[in-house]
Length: 154
Image (cartoon, rainbow, N blue to C red; front, side, top):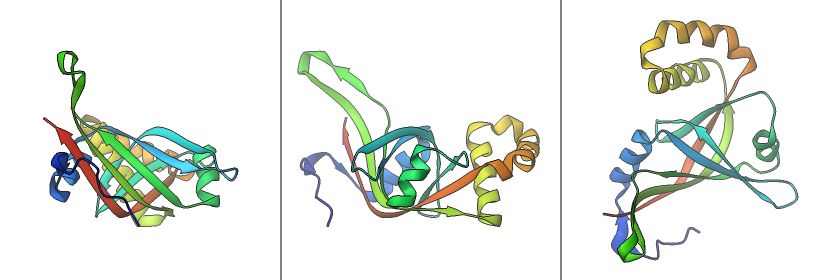
């Protein structure tokens, strides 16, 4: 169902791909709208429990797309370095394919706190208050990973 990496000599193993997902700050979520157009949006996220989680407003383009089709792709790019004399680039990247669904209650609150831990670790207590006040205006989406692949040129 999923294509193999063309450059198998650059394939990284699943464990290294997961480490890259954990350390990257942002990724690009790709969805498909009802007219068949792809939509890629950069977002902050966490990787935990073999899943990707992100938060969202209560409405918007990506949520509309997910209502019509819950299948997604998510990509992160780690360190890069252009090699001008080789007409190439050193890079590391991961792509996942999966299905997305909203989570609620305890799972939602745990994820929101983990997002605070990742992006604002010096403001945990303030973040807890923020979650309490803004939680009802926020959705949390979980991407269950069906396939993961990573590549690197070092």
